[in-house]
Picture (cartoon, rainbow, N blue to C red):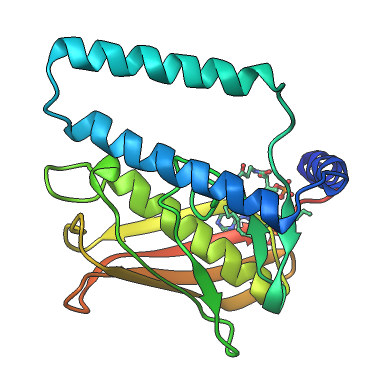
Length: 213
Ligand SMILES: CCCCC/C=C\C/C=C\C/C=C\C/C=C\CCCC(=O)SCCNC(=O)CCNC(=O)[C@H](O)C(C)(C)COP(=O)(O)OP(=O)(O)OC[C@H]1O[C@@H](n2cnc3c(N)ncnc32)[C@H](O)[C@@H]1OP(=O)(O)O
């Protein structure tokens, strides 16, 4: 008994009542995209100290302006086309989350979840390469989508990763995941990230367990 299932149900129900129409989503996604660009420039800018201070003050004022409109609850999850869960606030796929790259995932008829994406400097680990935790996050999420697409969703109980070679930053990457076995409440998913040359940079086996109530 983990209570995780009950807790998630409560969150799903509360968020179902939210009023997020597509026009509002598009507007917030635009804002998130601009914040993402800003974040990348915070890391890369060559502006001098006084200019940095002025920009920091302007950003503070913008944050205050949004706060004045009040705080809601994070955006919900909806089941979209082909049974894909759309989580607008996800740190991996969420169009409304400035911390998300965000990556887009599609699921083919055979249940393989796929994505093509580029990770910039915000996700750097070793100089010029993707942080291993970020690769793990992408594979965890993609595997979760594959488990769901298989009709056997669950919480990640285990994620066994092998980093085969460094994953390069700033170039097109692809990733795929597929459920390979189901045993009771457990779903085993295999996944991998490929570099632009088609060679595997990271691969994983994940176990998803549907929580008991
Ligand atoms: C409505 C609820 C359904 C859940 C759906 C969740 C998400 C679906 C929504 C959207 C999906 C779309 C996209 C995917 C999105 C995100 C993907 C990322 C997901 C995450 O980011 S998620 C956060 C990190 N995650 C956690 O926060 C889990 C914390 N943890 C727990 O909540 C419990 O720990 C739990 C529930 C996992 C298990 O707890 P439990 O008490 O129910 O089960 P128990 O421990 O008894 O294990 C049962 C059987 O699994 C075997 N087993 C366990 N671990 C294993 C391992 N590593 N390898 C091999 N086998 C393993 C045992 O050996 C036993 O096997 P056997 O039955 O054969 O004896």
